[in-house]
Amino acid sequence: MIEFHFKSDLLIEDKSKYADWVNRVIQSEGFSVGQVDYIFCTDEYLLELNQEYLKHDTFTDIITFDYTDGSTISGDIFISTDRVKENAKEFEEDVLNELRRVMSHGILHLAGYGDKSKEESKLMRDKEDEKIKMFHVEP
Image 1: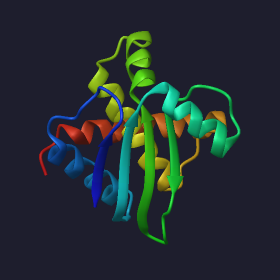
Image 2 (image 1 turned 135 degrees about the horizontal axis):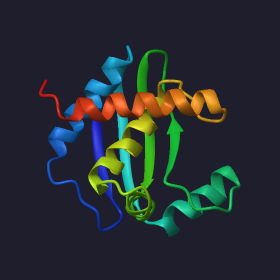
Image 3 (image 1 turned 120 degrees about the horizontal axis):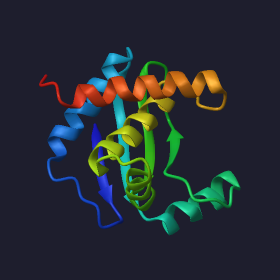
Image 4 (image 1 turned 90 degrees about the vertical axis):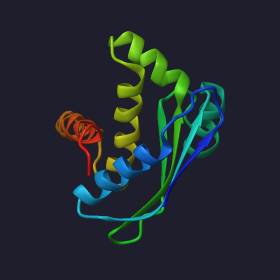
């Protein structure tokens, strides 16, 4: 089940469309859907999580807690909507498209993709682009 929680001013209007898309993204990677919770929050909220759980004292756009079991994707995906908006502005991107990029990024981490090396980052970006395109395809 895909669920959305809002602790910031950004709201997704058509939650069912986004939930369907996330389901298809998960299935396209050969996984089944467990429990995935998206928590949309502020920079400050995510910074506190970053400091407490990862011991990083920096702003970030996403933190993913992985509860995946075998081929069933589950996790909590915290997204700073402040960072999403800032990144969209910086990269001259539509805010909702940037949001979809970060949302797919979290799922890709849960599916086992990394982004630490140059090669991993390139593959991650390519996969994000592929998954964003799936949003506009009707099931």
